Length: 150
Image (tube, rainbow, N blue to C red):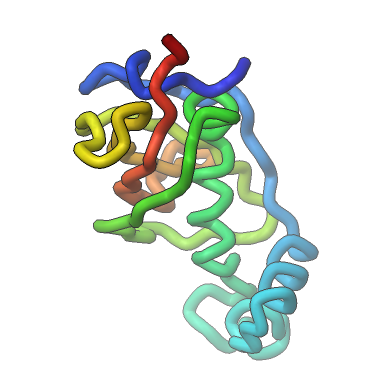
């Protein structure tokens, strides 16, 4: 399914995204390497054994990207101009290799663009959950969206 246009979103609308993804140790290693993040908590199993978690934590920016990415097919695929910003981002529970992540999105605000009559701004609240329905990530994201063609 293609993304929705600005005009098709309604405040309060909720999406429970169908696609889920099990994260792997390789995801963590690759993402940390690609983003030059050498934090031992993500890439060093021996170091992580001595932490309160006992194993490496998934990189939180990977988690954030995945939670938003899981929402794209239902919301903004092909209809977004760009992200305008994210606020109120939290990671209430850790994510580990082997966890299966899913995402839910709520439309919290929308307004027409004052300077771009063919576009509008939609504010999404994305929530990531693990396989036991614990919230592992929450963020509020504003995106500039296309309006439906006339």
